[in-house]
Length: 113
Length: 331
Image (cartoon, rainbow over all chains, first blue to last red; front, side):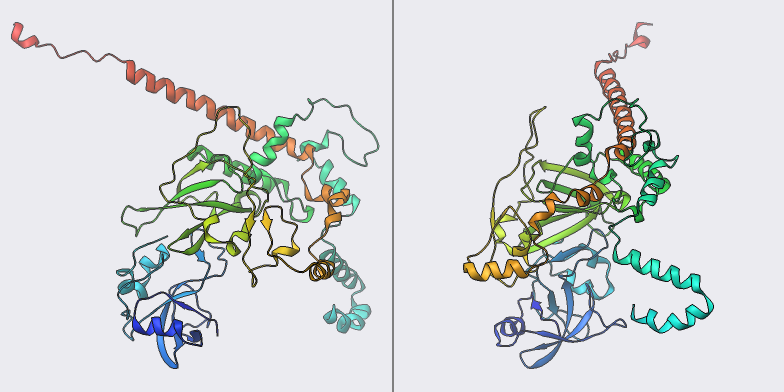
C-alpha cells in the first residue's frame, strides 16, 4: 500500500492529489508482486480504481545507470495503456524507451534522464 | 544460534568436529572486525605480498628497510585513486584477485580518461544508450558518494530537474560509459552527501550547461565550506545521529537533543581515538606500496603515449604539402 505521486495533467490526477487520502497501490500486475519502473499497477484514487504505470521509484537500485527519484511517481493509464493526460510533468528514466508498456507514454514526456 | 541448540545433542554424539566448526563460523560472523594474529601474520608474510620483505607488526626479527621512505605524494594516491584500495576487512581479501582486478582497471583506464574527482565535485557523465536519439545520454550533477572497492567501485550523481530530485549511480568501470568529465573539482566537509535528499532543492540544482571551472596547475583541491540547512522531519535517515560537519540541523529543544544523543547508537565521538579500529579500517602502508608501484607504471606509460600523440599532431600541422605542379602543360 505505498503512497504514490501522480505526475500527470489529467483531471483525475489533479483531483486525486488534492483529495484527503493519498493515492495508493492496491495491486501490482506482476508475478513478483513488487512494483518497479515500467510495471502496471492498480491505484486507489479518490475513492475509485484506476490503472497506472510506475515511472520512478525511491528505492536504491544496484543496477548502474538507472535513476532513483525523491518520490514514487506514476502516470494514470487506460486498459489499453493509453495515458489519460496529455503531458508528463517530471523527467522519466531513459530505460523506459525500450519498455513494451510505455510506448504511448513516452510521446508525452519532455525530459529523459 | 537458535537452530544450533536443537542440533547440539545429535552433533555431540556423531560429529564433534563439525560442532566445533559451526561454533567457529558463528563466532567469526559476530566478530568479523576482529582478526586473530596468526591469520594477519600469514597474510602479511605470504609470498604474494610486497610486505613479506618489509617490516611487519609482531615479527621477531626486523629486517632493514631497503626501499625508500613512504613519501607524502605516495600517500596521496589513497585519496586520488580510492578505487584501487582493497577491502580492509581481512576476510574479504584475496591477493590474486586484487592483482587481476588491478590489471583490468588499468586496461580500462587506458581506453578512457578517468579524471581525479572527490565527493562534492560537479561532474558530467555520458552513457551510450541505443534507444536515445543521439545514441548517448548525458547527465550532470554533484557527486554524493563513492562506494565499493576495486572493480565494483561506483559513484552517485545528484541533480534537481523540474523540481524533482534525481540520483543516478554509475559503475566507474562500466564499459558503456563514454566519457567522465569533472566540471568543478571540489571537496566538501563530509565524505557522504546523502543528506542533500532532505535539504532545500537549491543546494543540489546544477544547470545542464554548467561551464567547466579550471584550476591553476600546482594548486591544492579547494574545500567548499558551505553548510546545508536540513528540512524538518520526517527524514530519509536520522542525520542528527551521525557526526556530520556540513549540516545545519533544525532547532530542537536542548534536553530533547541530549536524550536523543545518549540513546543513539551511531553517534560515537570517542571512536577517533580507537587506534586498533583505525588500523583495521585503513590499508597499511606496506600493503599500499605494491598498488602505488602499479599506478606509477601506468601513469608513466600514459604520459609516454600522450607525448607520442602530441608529437604526431605537431608533425601533421607542420608538414608542408607541396602544391600540384601543372607538369602536363609544360610539355
